Image: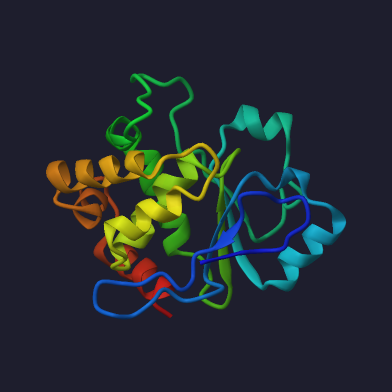
Length: 205
């Protein structure tokens, strides 16, 4: 994985080059994770467009979008897919995202499908406000179905500010113990096998 130079966009990186369990690596330029794009300068917006982005998936709440709309709102490549319920009905735990997975099934499914159905001829940006929690969970699901080992997923998550890898390691353990892994979880929440395969194929391209 490598940092990207999109002026005033922090916590941004290309998730290409991560090893998979069968000896391959994830493709470069196909999946990016970032914080909110609302601080991008004109040069930053131009750099994103130059990168050949086919879809931007904004996981923020509507209230966050209203307060800080991004520069791509209304653009054909932009999708707003709030990943969390408007008022959380569970206790937020800092050592695991298990409750997020358990209580936001329909919304997480919609976010994953937005990734699965992105046009194949360009990269996808996934972001929330800080590019850490919601982004971290959706990216982890995508990397897991692509065959990236849990320790690599946790290590990538740990590159975001103030996010210890153990929280993602615990989350992946939760997925395994309760759902039989990321693919099992996704099938249970309504994502089809074809949509899971589409994400796997995108990241392995």
